[in-house]
Amino acid sequence: MKPMNLTEKIFAAHLVGGGALPPAGEVVTIRIDEAFTQDATGTMAMLQLEAMGVQRVKPLSVNFVDHSMMQSGFRNPDDHEYLRTVSQKLGIIFSPPGAGICHFLNLENFVKPGMTGIGADSHTVNAGGMGAIYFGAGGYDVALAMATGEYQIPMPQVVKINLVGRLPAGVMAMDVILKMLSIFGVKGGKGKIFEYAGPAVATLSVPERATITNMGAEMGASTSIFPSDERTREYLESRGRGADYQPLAADDGAQYISETEIDLSTLVPLVALYPSPDKVETVAAHLGTRINQVCVGSCTNSSFENIASFAELLKGRRVAVDTLLYPGSRAVAIQLTNAGYMTSLWRSGVRVMENGCGACIGQGGSPVSKGISLRTFNRNFPKRSGTPDAQVHLVSPLVAAASALTGVMSLPDRAVEINAVPQVDDTASFLMPLPEAEAARVEVIRGPNIMALPDFEPLPSCLVGEVLLKLGDNISTDDIQPAGVYLPLRSNVKEYAMQATFNQVDTSFSKRAVAHRDAGGHGILVGRENYGQGSSREHAALCPRWLGIRAVVVAQFARIHVANLVNFGIVPLTFKNTADYDKINQGDKVSIDVSNLEGDLFMEVNGEKIPLVPAFEPKDVAQLKLGGAMSQFKATYCK
Ligand code: MIC
Ligand code: SF4
Image (tube, rainbow, N blue to C red; front, side):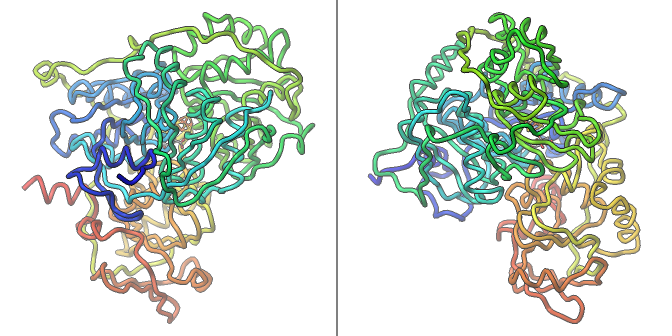
């Protein structure tokens, strides 16, 4: 038999209908072992799941609460209560606020080597550190996977990343992934799976591997994966899950589309400078840069090992700037306490915050005006921190500690050894599914923040309207549909659209779009490379759709966002010739004949006929015509 890489092995074992794996780029249907959401994407996903008429989910399913944690008013608590009760009704595990960050909890408790999964969050790929294939997806796709146990994705290309050498003292897993970002950039992973291999894999623990796979999302990769080996066994045993272990690796002679080698022993501490995770430089080049704040945590760097390293460097000394810490889970907080680190962190002046996303998604922890915040997080997009003129740079926990002590960007001044990882089990935090008969009697509680899903009309034969915004490269979903203080509106599409859509780019956008929509126009957006990078939030498609956007025309889309556009009936199109971008201006009147989505498509603007290429798959045509995925689902199953 032809030798297989690890990705091919897991795909082959999950291929619906069996047979041979299709070539890269062709859509494949795989069985999904786990599907999950978090609260900021979960309410919409659950509303869609309920609208599908599902009585009980098929695969292992979890709803985590970790993002929208600020309870200043009824909205977030209403969302949590809806998620708790709908989870109990539909057979879904519920992880309440305070238990921890979805990806971290997932690694600790649910992912096993060889599993497949999707999650309504772009960093679902974190699970690759356990030797599993997990994808980030929009809420609709996750709801569908909960209903059917299946997921469709274009077969990715597999890139081998050969790791050799050993990390020097003071250099961490964060530096490995920042090095990857410096090589591949924020769109270099599109359509690819990064498969890590080589002798240095054995030198990295599972949480270190997860730090690396986590930020594969920042390269636009479909996912990333490490083999499952003795280090995986060690991690699972430390969590009392030794029985979940199985060894997994690529066959000798397995084929890859390309190979890149990284010698860990040559790495130095790195920083991703504001405003992009791929603006990577050495910390050494920025020593002495003034900082105002340090934040440690996020799904990327909140393991016991990460925080213990941070605490060791601080031990016996006081921080010089505001320093916030978000443990990845309650179990990590207990481990830190049992190993003596909590006391030393408090004595060092660290503000120990709740186990959750916190400052990473702008739920508190915003820096001072014009401030510089050093964070161990994964994203530093403009305004994401909640302070419009602040800058966020991304670093490892050790650089964060060294800099917190001095108040300027610094390198660790001593090597640290951490205490052994205490064994801790916090599965008691989860609300497990009820038996079916009992579940059927659960009343789903919908507070006033839970609004019904809007219905969307079918696609007309010709889109006639205006270019409502002309955007540039790398527009993130934080630019399209900001989170932070708007998170409590995630269950209320109208309010979220009116208050937030593109408001960081153009405060008049929502009002202009609604007026254009109500006058019968079809809104068009124009952009360039890597449109929709970052988060999986389907609101970045749902809210624009509510505001009357019917097509987005760009040079290239990010993977999850393009799927979300299709799900909400917005036609995603790319320029055949990127230079045509220059021929279009904001405010131009345009028309696009979409009567035959399988034929040649053109945008008529300023007397020119600009050729376009579909960014959707042939399988998406029927859905686009009906106005979106829910319309198609209803037309197919709810007759
Ligand atoms: C993010 O890091 O941007 C988020 C918030 O976790 C998002 C999900 C969301 O917007 O709810 C993600 O990465 O998908
Ligand atoms: Fe939460 Fe930040 Fe991770 Fe997103 S990137 S899941 S907001 S910790």
